[in-house]
Length: 466
Image (cartoon, rainbow, N blue to C red):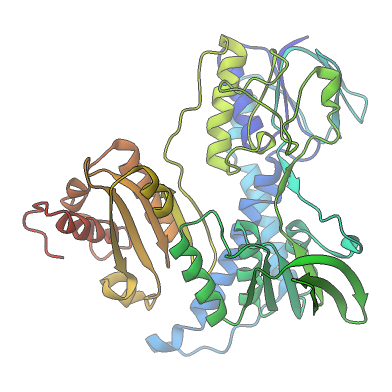
């Protein structure tokens, strides 16, 4: 009998198990497949490796501008996929989480098969393993959402796209959220002809509108066909060279064809095998596990964290939630997650990232000042030949605090990490402007745009020149 059993060994599950074990609870961690979950085996680690390859191809094509003569880069996909497997294996082998799991005495069951509840305090795996516990923490993550239209079995998910054995000449990407744009960007760099379809009026609908517009413009410039507000999908059909998508808009029928169709229309909770009713665990209307502010489910002794709850579905946020869930499972439901600044972004070309409020959301409750700095006016971007993009700060006029930072362009994801610290600390924009950040750097852009915002607010930033 365990004090706590954690189901799922992705980032959330691992941290939940570490937290409960560190508090003295006898803990078991069980996973259907490999240690590390989707993040290590089918998410950020392999995806970032492919995005790095795409960046290397892009950078190689720029070498001639710096007097370095090389031939045109040629992608060998099998070799790249072998490198991806090496990275995944190496990351798993050197994971500090794995060592901590061992050192804290967590009982780890890897590749146990699908796990399901058989009662409120028992769970079994397909392989026959049976576990009893006083508390459970569900961290089974999510899975790609499938379309329910005729012929949808002919489509692939992003997981299938990362494991291709040959480069498709053309790809239709359905859905232009974070996953869809990343698939489109990476395979466009590799040489596939990409058509990106978004049902709504703009790609990256959760981003600031200026970011969405800038990324769409850059994608079109790079040769990606971007089709927003395209209508409703009716069906998919097999063709001699691939797949045809049939769709309608306002009564007009249309179609598009490609060698491969990748569907990236959302993320669903990975709960289909759990048999949650046996444990008294309810789901919300979207199918995610329903939790309260303490990450406790409808069954008081069962908690949940990570993508399975449908909250912000990113690794850092999953880790934070897992710490809270693990704490409450052992010490009682007293800790809440709060609302920390959470930077998000993607390693597309160009990169984009944000932290805090979008301009539209900020204007709903604040009197704001908007300051934007174009990448073509900064030294480091000129040196690197990466002058497309901008950094935008949204500042509250009354408090001088930064409400949001939105970046599109080179190193956007890195820039917003610093902005997140600034926002979380409550630092006024004029104080940020006075910090002598290193020159010439991408992070230094934050200081310059902060100085611009401060001047627009008629604040004295001393010796700084804009």
